[in-house]
Length: 281
Ligand SMILES: [Zn+2]
Image (tube, rainbow, N blue to C red):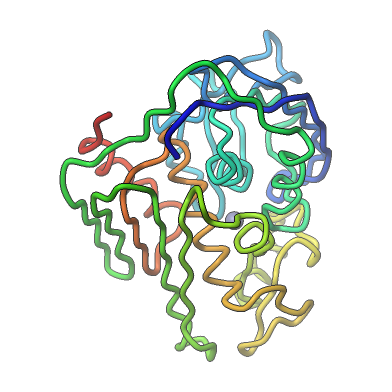
């Protein structure tokens, strides 16, 4: 992941419904300049406010099921993690994301539509060096049910362990090396998943407005009730994808071996708050 920074070659668009808002949003991915990072632009709001993909933008109140970013003027960009994971894994450092609603489309619940969109957009080398973050020391973040660890390394490798046995599913694990790893084949297709018992209540409460059963694997009695698995270890692979997307708000790859167990967006961002104090470049 060394070498030049990149952006996309040409503008591409997509459209779809947001998982939490239920709103149809049109998204335009536009090439950006060096050192701009990933910038969300709300074209539906007066003055087209910008929301930067940075740790400072993470809306800690809204981390239950997706990652929402919030700019200084209150503009938000929701469910950004699948696009951000795709950018990090596919080497896109700088990108403008114009969106005419508050939340990116969930599409099929995986990152594959975004990965394919980035492939279609092509990659353009920019005349500036990519400088991965380096890590001073091992960082560990532990809660009652989760554990995230980062160990200094020469490249970025991520692993996720999903403990599922108490739900009647064998435990799963997944790992991915940013750079050489085949994101489009191995990680991007893994879909969002939920337990039926959790989602039934949310659907009743109207909290997952875009959540038809098409955008997630719904698991009941240890089995997918609405679809078949696309990949083995798909549940762990999606958790890994989300972790990667959350790490992407650091703006650059992190040269570390990062392992997580039992964590979700909220724990990831708490971990990142600790991790960032130990980063240098
Ligand atoms: Zn996800």
